[in-house]
Image (tube, rainbow, N blue to C red; front, side, top):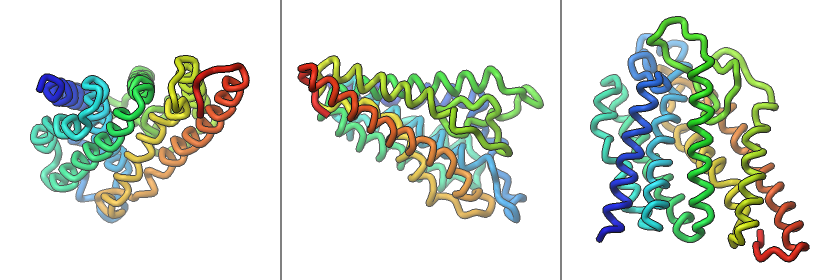
Length: 265
């Protein structure tokens, strides 16, 4: 029974803590994120706000599963604990969309939790990826030149520090390099520890973020909800990291196998 309490408690605290932190840092800015009056041209901010919501719940569910050594379904339910408060934060017009987004986050986190239960090494690497995402968010908050103190801080793509992160300019492919280095390092670490599937260390975070972006896509209509195309950059970025990270992990696995490492890709 204790393990269920751990799964629920850690997931609930992680979800509430991340959502509060996002709100405090103005990464999550519900008062600016949705403007029904702008339905004629769409909304550039709201799509990424949904990504932040889904990510906070999904990653919290994963943390709950890691802490409990399993119980992904229980952890997913725990991650939904702050849902009523979050929905109250959001504009009334977005209540249904917000609720669906939170549930999708729990589903994604629960599904990832099954993989964590099967491969412990993936859980360790998933925690590192979660920390990596928030490190990049923190850097974005620190360097962003706010037009006013209560302005929202753009974080697109989520988990990648772009220096010029905003909703009007793009980013160069070099911003993928730090995440790719993390993926490579985690796959080496997992292989060095003798984990059965070190490749999961490389792709755990990127694939979780890809799933988050894909889940948000159908929630957008192109009107006041914003265009799904707004998510294209982040989706492609993390998918690229997942593919290149998997390739690097395969290469590292081959090298370690030749050196007699017990790990296998």
